[in-house]
Image (cartoon, rainbow, N blue to C red):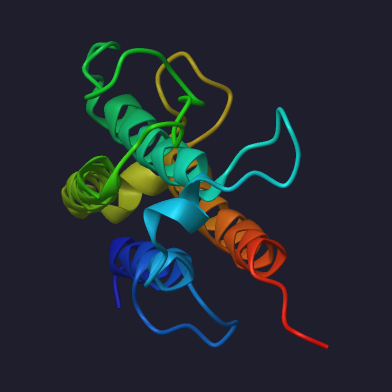
Length: 160
């Protein structure tokens, strides 16, 4: 198996393919309604909705670094964290979920263009390589999937 294929499998497992560790990112947001997505554990803390758009942004950022695309082409103004939830309805939630899927698809497409040798090369002007960046994006999905699982349980505690 080529190393690029292994990296693609890692990206997929972290995002949407059944994983041994429990829910992946898509599994963690499956069935989440806008009300749950906008719930905050405390003022100033991120909600599930913001985590979803944050993950979409970083998939975009990793793809952009790999393709050397110019900054500023993300679908939303800003970077990293985007205020979400307040006043957002089901149509906006659905659009943000579609943005996440689109960014994953685009990232996956960019990674599929890589050769195994590309994975070990440092990125131009950076002190890290392609493999580190792409694997980090997969780990980012798994990390936030865990946060989302916790936020869902806090938003809807089990009765005693």
